[in-house]
Length: 213
Image (cartoon, rainbow, N blue to C red; front, side, top):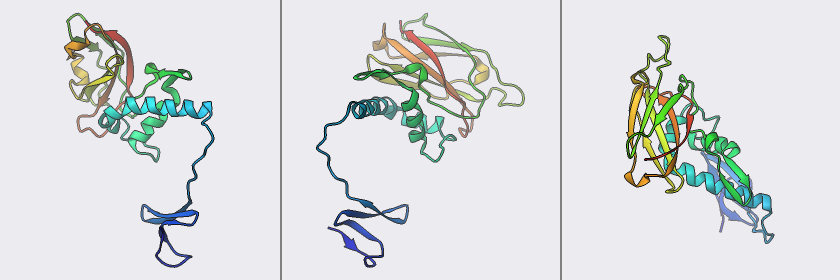
């Protein structure tokens, strides 16, 4: 039942007839009452729902990382919603109903910090990934003091592993331990750099997929 606060021309809350009154950011708003449809969903609607579900399942576990990676790229949205919008547009592939995540197109960071250089990756030791790169920071940049973050995703286990702020850009090497139960699994790898104070970040870079020893 609705409640009048200042008469028919003033704000109100709840359902009154066919309209609903509410408050949004301190502003009184009114919208039409939603009506359930008995029509079956179209194939395009089902495709959109499936894509939403896939992206939600992938991004939800890494919300903290997304909040850093998209902290300065919000475009009027929250960092998570900005990341969701970008990845929904390019990060889904396949023909409905066989939709999957398009891993090379997934973005976990958008920022103005110097982009990550090319990385070399190796799996010479069991349950470990070895990363090497060249410090591409100049004297007018961070001098290589910004910190490396790595994201791994194991589709078979449907599990993410993060290594946050684990090495400076200037260190040019890092060895990452992964779960032992991931042996022989294939993982997808992304990297980005974040300033030492955590206030700015680079764009992320997809390094490809690798089989864990």
